[in-house]
Length: 317
Image (cartoon, rainbow, N blue to C red; front, side):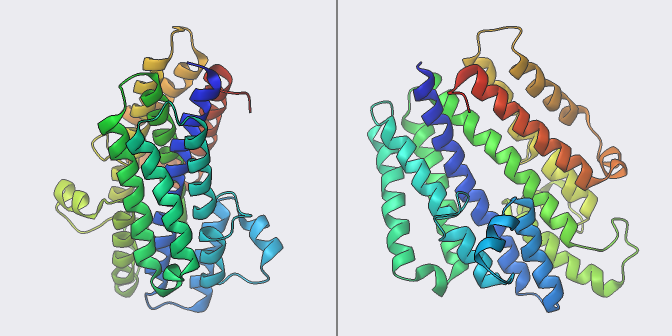
């Protein structure tokens, strides 16, 4: 396969997944902002979201204050922000158009229809009327795109590069979402917080689990009250949780093996090492190290793997 074609397929899937995960992060912040809390705490939540997305400087150039409506507009509608939902869906559609002949008709039409519909929804003010419903729509269109891709594409290198982009982006964004939420909730991991704080924390942890479609999964796996260390275990180490870091990196490794022909590939070595650490890691060791430090290091390593994928298979960055 031409590296240019692989590059378009890889980034088409990454941008689609990024739009979904941006919607998930915004949705969890929007839902928790409706809970009883001070203005300072609410502002910290939105500031943390911009910070972990590395958008705080860009946001500061356009807005004088951090407020829920301005942050959501910036991360949904602002096409000068390359990580906004509009920008991501536009980039996904443009990458799909560039390799139109490689895609099935159903995959192309899904991306094209998503882009046309999101422009109409923004123009008609549907996002402002009900942000929660808009975020659900973005997630649904991403699910539809993945389903149509797996259900209609030939299982060759094209599909493998698309899946590689999807799961690398998912690992990155799940780590960012975890980091935002664990920093936002101030209560102690092991229950020294007051009963009122613990009651409020229940809604925060419920929100983060719902944001990754993990609330019912948590109940099924642990059959207990929601505890921060178990949320961390579920979303980092559980291989059977679809959006966990372990599950995402395992899929990255699988698809790298399918497209790679070099047994001494540095890309596969680095991805395999990270995957092995997740496979044999322990929650208590991660928390002892510091969750923020662990997730920051994880994000650096995922970015490094992405750079190696670009050098080995795609167009040079």
